[in-house]
Amino acid sequence: NEFKSVVKYANLYLQLKPNDYNTQIALAEAYYYTGKYQEAVSTANATESQPNFKNEKENYKVYYFRAAAKLELKDYIGADKDANAGIKLTPPNNKNELADYHLILMETHSRFGKDKEALIDAKTVIESYPDMGAPYGIIGYIELGNKNFHNAIVNLSKAIELSPEIAMYFVWRGDAENALKLYENSKTDLLKAFSMPDNTFRDKTFVGLALVYEHENNYETALSYATQGIQEFPKCTDLYSVRARIYYVMNDKEAACRDLKTAKELGGKEEANEYA
Image (tube, rainbow, N blue to C red; front, top):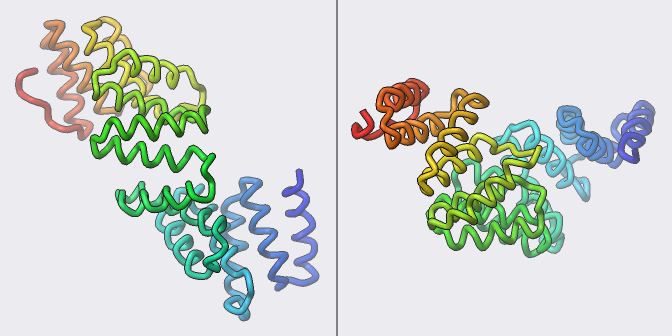
């Protein structure tokens, strides 16, 4: 494709002019968009080390592609640092490019538990990209964590409208609906997420479905989802805790105690003694 060609010809050109700034930027971009994130970081590092880097007109672009690549490499501290550095260099009237940095910071701030900053980032992104689902998803996730379940549902519904292919939005909305005792709605969302092949929150989906069916007193189905989840995710403490409660209600105290012991051994929160 286009970016693969850029990688090929940019490397050839840099053999002739190894310090050509614009070519290095183009190469870092091409590496990023072809999924070669470590190469994108290395190219950006080489570009930044040039003697005249600070005087280059669009030097802020180096930080964007390096930050974006580091985000993909799960180097959240490095991505956060580069995004902040890029914002300082980006002209204030470049709204979309600033929004691109805030999109990265939205992710890092969320992961660092900096909800206030993540909300500011999300709102900045929405101003430039109102049709993007990700910022609404982050807002919904933060509202869910703060137990503002109605606000969570509103924002996650918007995220789903704009990005219906993202399974985690259905999982989060299902959790919020479950908290509000909207069990049928929760079940619909969680079953939707369960059927999606790219669901990276599959363990949480099992937990949610087990909880929904438990709340409906459908203990056999709840137990089935919890057990299925444990088979796929044997280190998920929430699944053992939920299954322990289901076993307890079904009057199988021995199995309940066994699951609680496993959850505790895996580092889960100690449950109430009523299950013992």
